[in-house]
Amino acid sequence: MTDVPASDGMGLTARMVDALKAITEFVGRHGAMPTRRALADVMGCNPNNANRLMDSLVERGELSAVTRRGWVAVAGFGRDGVLISVRPHIAARLAAYCAANGEKVTAVADDAIELHLDQLEGDVARDVARDRLVAQVGVKLMDGVNAGNVSAIREFQKYLERNDLMMYGQTQQPAKASVAEKPAPAEKVGKKAAAIAAAQQPDAGTPLGELMARRQQAVTSH
View 1: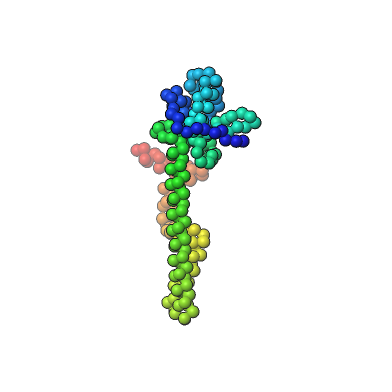
View 2: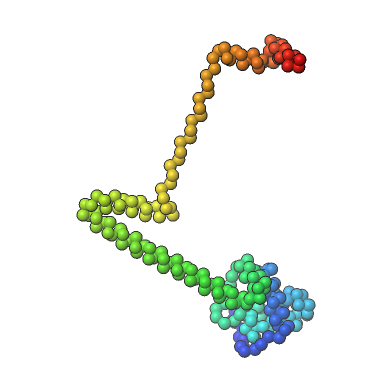
């Protein structure tokens, strides 16, 4: 697999601009570069014209191409630098954004990667500086422990606990599980009150209970 060389300093015709836009939109939908036949379908031309458009874009450095088994295939956008492959769904998001905002894929990719690397380097630098400061505090506390300073011993114990928590991604001790409240005891009912309640709710499953239920119903209806 070898890179196909391109020349610089050549402008784009209106037809080439349309082809480049169509290719970008295709990648935004499918996450892959179109074949020459697919470009021909989008552009409404024959495959030979699509082939010439792609070749012209490669010559002008707008597209990069590689040869596989003697065939030239368009592989990505741009030519300068290092050709990097990204997963289809990332390529689709990138191309869709560029197509919607009139941006060049290579420019947006460069900015996004550079910004991400700056953030990573900043995070690493902050972590290193914090670790050095924490280590210095530990050394100072250890000096106090060796000197028999009671306050330093207590602080050193807290220091060790905090570092143990950091090892597991925690910032504080987990809260203790609360003991479930016991349900309030049921109010005791005397025999007389129980008898009155039973009389008000007779058991209809027995002859006496059914009779009492009918009598209550009759009194209620009157």
